[in-house]
Length: 566
Image 1: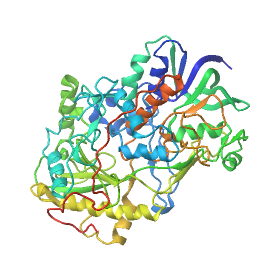
Image 2: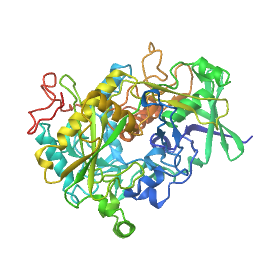
Image 3: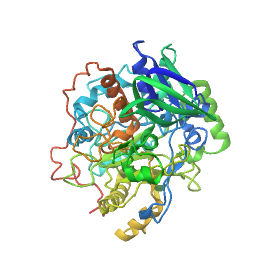
Image 4: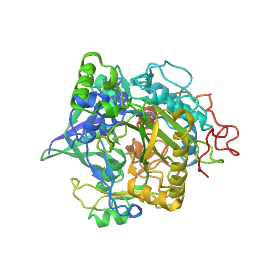
């Protein structure tokens, strides 16, 4: 076996790993190795924002994980795509940039993640970002990650109509959901720069790759972390049929994601005793939380016919797609430069809920999950779902062969509170779309369908139609020493193991209110300073907007046209 040595060995070139590779190699003082199981991200369809369904559905770029039969979804198996390419899931995702709510991070600290509250996280969000609107107290202006609003909602009036409908329904408007005020209806940000996808590979790795002290190996599947007693000394990885060993002078950093990182730990003999015994892996360090606490967001497509022929359903033919592609190739603008989620909303489901727990993505098209048209003619849809689930799942290896995919069980809707939240969600969504601002556009309801009204009918429809929003997280949770499920401490160090950290979405104590790419990048930015032992960025002194009457009201005023949401 070939044996090499580096100061830092990073496993996974995804949303977190690319950030770490860049920041740890920046000074030139440390040798860094980045291992990625996938290959290059230099692909036209990865670069083009509107082509997002292509990399998502390509086995070259996607691990194509799948859940076990979900017992509370009538044993349906749900897709769990994860990036297998430079940039990881940031190279195949929908490019939605949502930081989460400030209270999400305050909640992390309350759960034992010391100094991971909003004021300590905000400076790292700002450091990562170059927002098209320029820097302010909340947004960054000169970071590597480009963020913007696609076509600024200018190419379709439905985006603004959706925002106006939310205001009609009594909710606030916000001009910047990643700034002071997440709650409300407004434009949605995306990781697009100069008309192209801005993954972490583009933003961080391309500049880092030019440094002599960074080595990147693709097609390298990590098999396990190598331990000497309770000290991590390196990793074993496979390229083709060759098994290789690399040693770490300082640390091994796992950034393989919420499915990959717990699986690698378990294959390394670190994890729940029973899981390892069942998989015939020798137990080297018992850590019951590895692979537990799995969380994800679910969503449905709430669809309506559109009375006016203005939706993207009119752009799905080969000629139209060709013209969109040609314009994008020449000018990097137009429909090709957007993910088409250009307006959004975050609302609270009930009075007494302090911060938003329901998210809406608005799309001026009625589509199926495979990207084909859902209807003849024109339509639009909301992607909607509760964002703070109470059900918990797990990830576990099934054998001692690292090439075997792990068993993934989310236990979606196991908790009765989640089912209750979905009923509220469906009723509130229907009420919003039926406001006056949408009257000139809104046709008949396609799905769920106006006949879906009772608790029982909603429960059945949700069970049959709900899909993952592709946000698996929290399987190596960060927490206090007295938390039996905590896998890492507040410095991302694996408990009981020296020189081993996990840095990715798996260490979130609880899933955030929104898409996960943005907080994962922030997390890696902050972790890089911790690993290097440098002075952390000064805590922010600004506060988020919170409805002062959140305990008494669900929204700011009664809806113009009330629905049956109670």
